[in-house]
Image 1 (cartoon, one colour):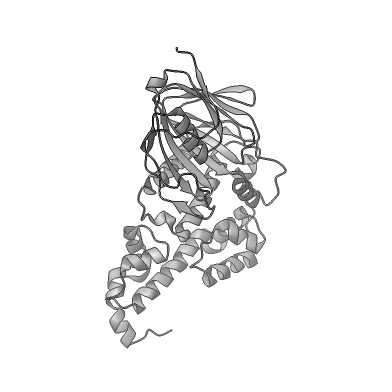
Image 2 (cartoon, rainbow, N blue to C red):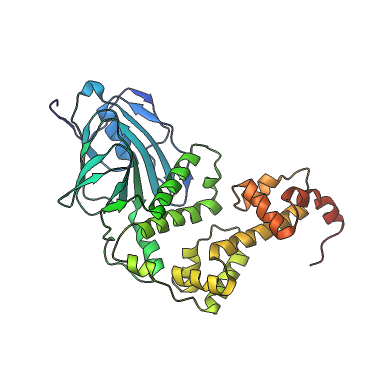
Length: 363
């Protein structure tokens, strides 16, 4: 093994094969951005600058020859979540500062990674991811060249607020996640698949994930999913049955949904406005309506989309435009749900718009 070379913090004017646009700008927690193109460079300094801008300031140490060094990375931003698909072409070590404001999950897609975290050694593999708290020392002591890893950065305040809404209580400190996250269980695999699906969907600049009606519940699902698959002191509370929310709270949530189905509502927001926990509201909806709050929201949006189709001018409106406006990203599933509820396809509803306009439906 060659002598290591340490790269400190700094800005380098390095050659790159592909430089992503606006890679260094801050991310609005309420917005998503299309995935940046694959970024490739053979400069360790440029690699450190760009990866540091997407994640955290760090020091890069080359464990192999500088001649063989290369970084390949693609980053996507899903509101308060940043996902990076990363490959170093030579062995490296990475040291981070302790003052991070995010929980970090390292998921090897191929190969392995060895790290030091809070005085202990961790080995991450495709079967075992690693979780790092924001307030503890963290270093990748051996990132083997050619191994491919999915780095997931989640805003601490967002994760903590989501957990507080689930348990209907307050946290006094960052969550003590178990640093090991087994990936063989079905739920953990589903969470990783969802991350990858969203990450890849954002390659398309016209992806509907950027629609706020889609983004807000998607971010909530990713964070809630993480809290349900990771081990932490509140898991037992999350796994235990919740007391159903009172019927008045369910009614209040229904009224909020009916008044604003065009808004990017989430279960957490509804629970907060109705002064109950997320789990109580979910259980209350299941008991009183036989569905979740988000399922009820989709039903209301389907009604509004149907109403818009029946009153629209077919020469100026498309089914896709109406579906996307109401947060339905998959036209096939939208058509199936519409026909199940109304006995006609969205196209049939739109084609009947002219006759509907001549003869309004009875209210």
